[in-house]
Each structure stands twice: as structure tokens, then as C-alpha cells.
Length: 194
Image (cartoon, rainbow, N blue to C red):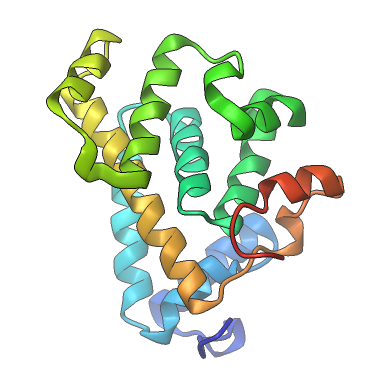
């Protein structure tokens, strides 16, 4: 980390509660969580906001992970690529499938609907100013509702914001997220080197 943050042993109140919950769940505190505490008021605000967004996300956890993974590559965010690659390996059951998505989701065996979703997420992350009404109609043609389209845009946009903040504050992926397979690890290192 580049900035001074609140260490777990110094955390109090709501920050301590957030830290303790994450440590209980993961066994460690992510730098992606701690980096918000340079300004102590931010972590509780952001955690509540993100929890609310995820609780009402219309597409499901797997879709959240796919969108996030594709957006992270565009940022490019090594941290988020490693974290979400690990989650997708659990979802999909193989590193080969995750590598295929990372190389080119269009040829990775995903459904046409998933490909349309990820093409939109990718464009949001690359340059949302180029999105047109035709892009939205394409998504509607694949059966997405306006709420779901909004959620795709929100998920991809949030990833851009969060990933850039993590990189700007010096947060790096924890060892638990770094695969032992050096080729897989290298493929997920899309931005800042490890």
C-alpha cells in the first residue's frame, strides 16, 4: 500500500466490524478493503453502498463475476483479474475455461446472451461514450430487461472505479489470490506487475 491505512489491531467501531467479518470469512484482510481507510469515513459508506448494489443485482453472482472479470481486463486491473479469476474457476470448474474467457470471451463457449452482456460490459469499461441506442437494442434482443442492462453498466462501471482506486492507493493482490500455476498467474496479470 502506498498510503497509511487502519491496521486491523487499530480498527474500532464500524471499521473493526467490517474488518472482523472479512477476516472471519477469508482468513485475512484484503488490501482492497483496507485502502478505503486512509479516509476512515469511506469504508463504511462504500461497504454499505456495494452491499446494497449486490443485494439487488438482477442478474446473479455468476454474471457479476463474469462482468467484473471482463471489465477488470479493460481497466487493466491485475488485482481484480486475479480475485475474480479465482472465483470463476470455482464457478466454471476449470482454469482452462477462465483462460479462454480471459483470452477472448467471444470464443470461450459462452452463450450468445452472455457474449452480448460481456461485449456491453467491455465497451462500458473501454469507452462508454461510444455506446449507442443500437447497443441497448442488441441487449434487449437477447432478452435483457432495462433493469438488467442498467445492472450490467453499473457492475462494469463500479469495477472501473474500484480497480483504479485500488491501483492508485497501491493495493496489491494477496498471496491467496495468486495461482500456483505461473502461466495462469501471468495471464491474469493484465495491469500492474506482481
